Image (cartoon, rainbow, N blue to C red; front, top):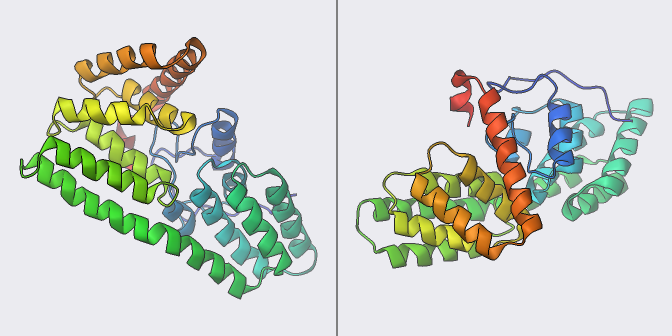
Length: 276
């Protein structure tokens, strides 16, 4: 049994009233977690800085998050809460962590949950987990910030398209599995919609994305296809590439997820734009 939910520290604009149910829906739909339907993807900071503090939502994030970094981040506030409990309340947290260990989608979080149970939720072990997470995510974020400078050089015409693509491939190789997928996805999404990025560069990026693992490819490509800000030429190119590269089942899956994202966008109030 999961611990009783605690109130949100602060509400994210447009966030669903029941964040745990929303995360469960994301898990059932086999998508990455988002702060709200049609909003940006969850990153580790959201689970560590009080944006999401409801215990039920954190528990669901640990279980259904496809992003291993996000799933492990959800364990840290739960572990802190467990370390302060005793008696029956501690037993309930132990049951929760046993459920996470058994059911979590991300293998990294299953190992971390088991380690916290074995350590009796000692604060030292929780700090170790936080340090492990920071040691993985921190350097990758530094590389991300450096890549933002490369994007600026491209928009200012100070590097060639080919040099930029080389930097993008190097950036992707260095951060793969080490950076919150939400941050990486946001970076790619902004490249696709930026008016200052040449269409030829966007086309090359699209072809790279189409070679990614299926879950990552689907997330990035369906966001592109569902975006009202992507130029029609890139949408047409994406559809053409998909028709030649993917089989009929994969194409159908892409279409369905694109429709889902468009329906989420249609449900979002205009004032929610800042949250994404």
